[in-house]
Image (cartoon, rainbow, N blue to C red):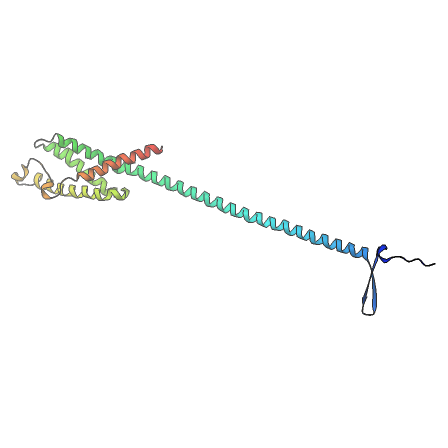
Length: 216
């Protein structure tokens, strides 16, 4: 009596393939094992690639962050340097130009308030001395002046140049009549004292002083 086994009820353990005239019998278990190993190898490759890609990305991000940090640091240092340079220039302007010029302007203003008749001592020892010093400071420290002060500064210099020309003519002249002039003025010769220039220096003195004091 023959036993009939339904083909679907028996688990196939071998795979038969024909290649030309030869017949190849391959264990299905070995084939599944190979496929499993191959799949694991592909998964490992994918994992390694993922790790390497992550490392590369992390490295790139690190470089970008470092570059941004260096750029920010350089910007902060440059701004700080500019701030220090600005403060130093303001102090130099205040101490070497605005302070002395405004002091002598105030001194001559006080002298004019009590200059009611000829007073050669006041004229030579106060007016001439302060006029000469203002002109010297402006010319020696012109490079420290801000652009808005250069015009007023040259107005003062021009006035004092003309004033000393009149001073030499009237006070150092050998003509007694010229030497008897009660006052020495440059205004009649077309060079009156530039009040707007004086106001510009005084305003700059106050503004610069306030800015430096607030910053400390």
